[in-house]
Amino acid sequence: MRTSANWLKERFGIELPIIQAPMAGVQDSALAIAVCNAGGLGSMPCAMLSAAVMRSELSAIAAATTSPFNVNFFCHTPPASDPRSEAAWRELLQPYYDEFGIDANAASGGAARRPFSHEAADVLSQFRPAVVSFHFGLPAPDLLQRVRAWGATVVSSATTVAEARWLEAHGADAIVAQGLEAGGHRGNFLSDDMSEQAGTMALVPQIADAVGVPVIAAGGIADAAGVKAALALGAAAVQIGTAYLLCPEATTGPVHRALLASDAARHTALTNVFSGRPARGIVNRLMREIGPMHPALPAFPLAAAAVAPLRAGAEALGRGDFSPMWAGQNVSGCAAIPAAQLTRQLAAGL
Ligand SMILES: Cc1cc2nc3c(=O)[nH]c(=O)nc-3n(C[C@H](O)[C@H](O)[C@H](O)COP(=O)(O)O)c2cc1C
Image (cartoon, rainbow, N blue to C red; front, side, top):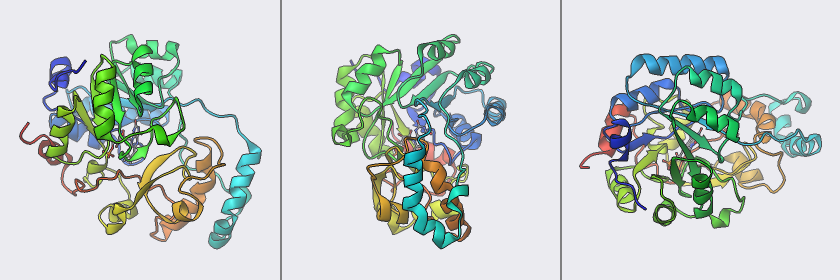
């Protein structure tokens, strides 16, 4: 069943069928506020935030807009620490530690990626956001129930038809069909086999035919023609990430911005070397020399800690050789213009 492209308007009074993708690590409340106030659905990613920071960011959104907003979480199962695979990973990185004069045994850090928890639900319940979205499946039923308690619309990403069916059966009210073009982490949670995953144009109509809930198209959408095409394929709305990365309201770092605006952004690949899970980013040195997909890494998100000091060392020199430079395949919509202007451009002529 296909839901009309007026879904966001009918359900939430949101004027435009545009959702600004939650993007952990490259945005805070400012981007979400700008998109909400421009008539789209702004999103606040919380996967890398402490409860205190989450509270202050959500307070900032609540103070700056009366529009509904989306709050996003990861919901992976945290892996047990695996000293053997972590030691093997450090050994593989040893030549780089030597290059930067870093002590491998002291190499740890980076912002933790935490799954949705009761602590996060405690904070969230003070704000009762209209939309709560998840990546990597759905949280445990008791946690999901807490979100449902205030009537939030629950959204999660599917990378295959099977995942979309699973999400609908387990309580998702809408599904992001995340095509292979998308920047950032793949949302897959039933299978690690990337050969099952399809591009947005193939995925959206298949998921729209397979489920009864609204489908949100994501991946490679970067202009008004792409938005219209996704809606024509059966999407009720679109979710756009990469195109917002150069907006002044995003916190995208200077090295990442420069790469997005350069020829290098024509080369993206799926890689697991930054976190242990596949994600799409601009090809850089670590991806080229160790990846892009390495067969034996510490499980997500543990692989990130050993890379963190290399990332810091290279960034201090103005280089993105060891940083995740997340980007989708279509950077043609990236522009250093206010997010409100970009949102209106994406919806032009609808
Ligand atoms: C820099 C970056 C960070 C991302 N972080 C998240 C995240 O924290 N949570 C999430 O659900 N999706 C995340 N995504 C994926 C987006 O939700 C979405 O699937 C993707 O941006 C759509 O494709 P596009 O980038 O081609 O527009 C991220 C994407 C990017 C580019």
